[in-house]
Length: 133
Length: 133
DNA sequence: GGCGGATCCGGGTATATACACGCATCAAGA
DNA sequence: TCTTGATGCGTGTATATACCCGGATCCGCC
Image (cartoon, rainbow over the protein chains, first blue to last red):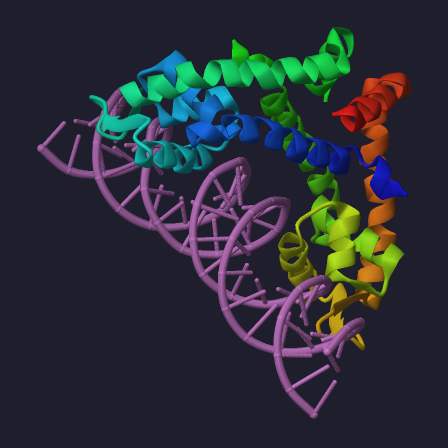
């Protein structure tokens, strides 16, 4: 029974399920929720180094680097160099901006669905609880 | 701002963090929470086929298969064949049982810590909310 | 006994994610 | 200017996880 009460396992299960909601909604654009979210962060911090971005999204730098490379391959961002030759500087491409425009309402839709299903009160509770972990 | 309110991103973040709690606690045993949980499920269903196990833990069969292979390599489970030659039948080894014995109190510790931090009421709320997603 | 559909698994491929290592670059001090 | 330590990255490796495909096996029906 311990498996049915393990906070970690339940979180993982919920995360997989919720991820699929967003992924399905964004599928027409060819991006998943992780990529979409990363893109949003890049736009907000642009131009930004891998290290700074990783810090912001609280992911390992190497993880962000690999994810960014996928976005680059898709033509959604450009990876260049700053004055500091060590730095990989990320900037969004027009195509990347387009994805953000088109994706926004799709993202909103899923977000709204979830809040409608839970109710605003519980949705808020959930966010609070997740932050307290 | 949308990134700070995205249910999916917040869930992922929380999952990573909480996973690390369990992983650190179980580290002395050389297993992580995913492996520990899978082992628990195998013990409960033993002897069990990959397909049945995957169904139980709500993961893709191929995922469970690969995870099981790791457990086998660690000597915690044995992967054999049933009468149906197609079936991969999983059974726990003595070493696997030992890990479960030793891990139980460690798992309890993390679980208690989390509930202490949140309070029983909120911990319960969290589980309920995760189930509603 | 033999064929076709159903079932079970393994492996290929792709993203998510972390940690450790090694290389290049930078910056500060001798 | 040269040495050193700090910083920024990329890659290797490992687990988590999914989807798809192909091969093996099983089973029911002819």
